[in-house]
Image 1 (cartoon, rainbow, N blue to C red):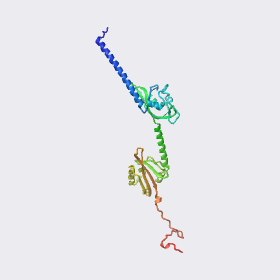
Image 2: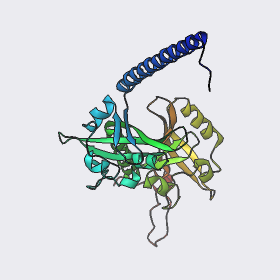
Image 3: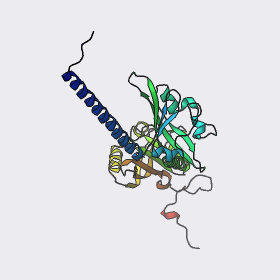
Image 4: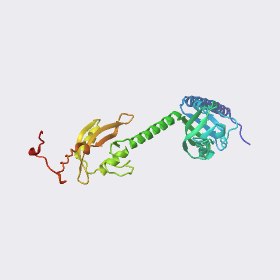
Length: 311
């Protein structure tokens, strides 16, 4: 038969229970405080945050930015197999819902991290938003997937700018290629970024695309002072040469007119140079007139005594 606790032991147990209750209340208050802090942080993030339960895919959390970008919050009846339909998520460039197995939220449920930048969400007002979405699994204390969390941002304007820039670059390449002048654009390593057909024609480089090839490899005997001028151009100088000899590989000599201009990145940093050239050998060469022929068909030179006389 067990002994009854003494008065002192009862007092000690009461004190322990009171302390445990106080600790529990402190923990609850701490958790409540952490939850409030987490909500404030989530609602002030500029990126959307969306979390679903694993393995069901039932939405658990959507912060303010997510609701604004998706045009919806927690949609009842959503699960891992119909998230694309419920949130009107489409594959960019198609009329098809985003494939479930390719969605970062689905990959997170499977324990994988994944990122896409081609998810288009149709908002309730009919407008489209292009999203970049990154997802990761959320693990419990046993290391099992408890949820899937995705973060996303609106990249509609960025994508439009990229497409516009790409379009402008394609137009520039087309313009340079077909311009009726010898023009070439190089980076700071003198690798071709673009060139006109006339450039390859004037310098006997054939019909191949020279993009990526080094100017110095194509012209190994380039005058040393020309290379120094390239460096000066990289320092921001515009260089013009009206008439200058240009030795050919076959030993012949051409005369060229040259202009070198630096080109700059958006950051204003010089990225390379543009060369404008014209072969003016025919313009510079003065052709001697052909002497007149005599009656017997041979050429006759006119001397001082052969000047025509007035009749």
